[in-house]
Length: 130
Image (tube, rainbow, N blue to C red):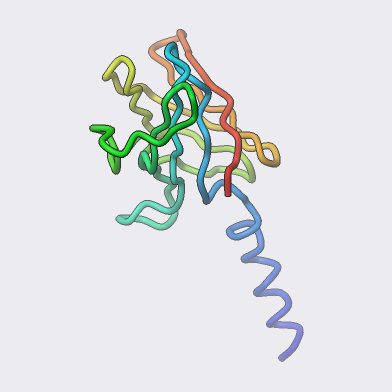
């Protein structure tokens, strides 16, 4: 019985070992402001990763309590084909109010996020807050 428990835990390990779930700090924008994005399982399907804007900060690092996009989805339907890789999702860029095809790559406490249209991509490196 003990061997089956160990095998079950090992089989489930990639699901909880991948550290994308949590709060991520975006790179500063043109005005120096940045966002905290909460990533985790999508509510409609735990196999996909989604994210919402959790907090917004100005160039001085002060929280913007009345930021219009708080709680708005920014990443959705990211598939996780292998550990640390997320593909075939969408990302919304608040500064341009545009949605792009997206991919993300996780390496420790760093998440490389890209939004692409055809062969043209724009990206950021996010850092884990918690």
